[in-house]
Image (cartoon, rainbow over all chains, first blue to last red; front, side):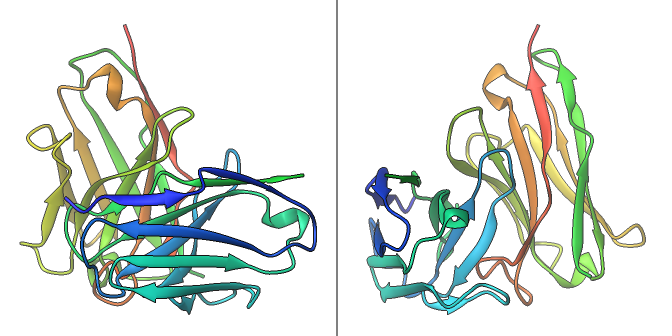
Length: 107
Length: 120
């Protein structure tokens, strides 16, 4: 199975900050990586697919990059609605696997 | 509008069975890959099962293989997850999600989830 290691597991940031979350795959997954946002008590929301493509309706403050084994999600100009948990997922191989998640909290 | 609605969750005893439904609206579920993902209380996301456009494209996580069965009812535009031999560790919110195009491809639409509690 492809292991997805996400870091950090949590971070504190202020409104207006820019934050970066990292996801590393245990083997190459080309660009078959997605990012999801989840708020407490809510379903996940798809943000990015194919490592860098924004889902329809997702603001351009979210950006993704990477290929192979190393990927990043960057969120610019953090706003209150962005404080949530974020997960990466690889879909190059079954079983599909998620990273452990990153909780973005208000400082 | 593309929407997904899960149902069928509830309280079940260990060893029992439950069938979850994933009803699609605004799209034809048989034209899309559909996956089930679960989240145990306070934990992260875990992929459970998926069904592709082709009938033979069916996949399961090792943790549920042999106990869970995914299927599709095309006329009802619904995907099911039949769960049997349930264990306490299967307790979670179960989400259904729609793929992009004919594969998963990171998905694009999620349901609101349905809670399964396995307890005596």
